[in-house]
Length: 431
Image 1: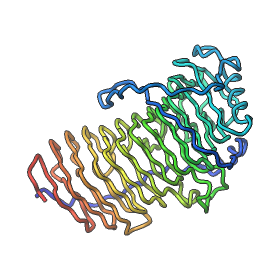
Image 2: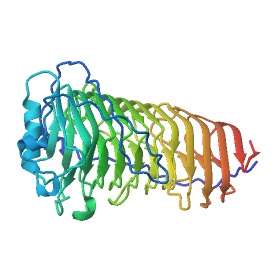
Image 3: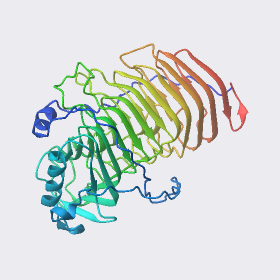
Image 4: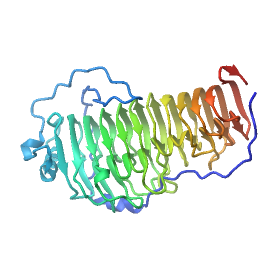
């Protein structure tokens, strides 16, 4: 058995805390309606660009777009990627939210690029219920040189029974000023009051801060009740790519389901944490945190920080299944405050691990939580840090770790009691 006890070292738990002043800025955004309406029946598929770590999805017939769906061209949009379509897009969303009760739909022209610039803190909003947006592969693109020095939410959802399908938001980070501090500029924002929201095949490219931000900023901070938290949210094969801080930030939610998708290439904003998926309530602000987050079949690769972070307080019932987490700063970073289950994680290509191990489970303010890990595979890593590191004082169990072609001689770096079984190094069982 290869198992050593390296000297304990301090840890810096990543924080994604934002200034409470963001809530004041958001007071200019539209309020949330609460009338229950049946869920729209929609179906579609993401149109993803194949990469070495992303299989090309099977073709799926496009959804039937209802008659009477609003189109940007009705309001004067051109969609050539050059013409400034800001006024037309703003008129489209204003008309959508002011429409009479009942289902409503928006349909963008297939493959068009609608350029826009900043005119308000929440640029485009969906605040009425029972809405379906058919992106048809279109892109909403921020124009060159737009400032990055203050908060800006590009598409905000704060309503019930909403579906958005196959729509890209290109925040155009590379052609805008470098963000030098932590300003909340996100492509997609799922705000408080959102219920039964499905984003299917949507994309974010080059967000200065976060590709998607899930948090209740309708309620006054700190939030002591979860009544308005985004609830029953489905991210179905979304792609959140090359964001400055996190590709996906989950701050406060109930019953969030992430199915497939890619969360890759987070890097850039000073301080990080640069995670593919960051599940991290803000200390002292989001008092009810996240309850019920499931990540199933996602790809979290090539992020400067962790593939997946679960940190800070008030995270419980977190489930991670069948995830690929390659070439990140670390594959999985857990600072538990509630139950976490990991069943199926594949990690490879770790040459410079940024945390205590390729998989790291470290102390939090809430000792004693249950963490269960099964079916872990780590391969082709040259960093000398442990493959699996744990010094969290909780009920941690590991059943099934296969390490293959790893440089480290410390497969398990464990300082606190943990249950360990079925650990293999290059096919030989060592524990």
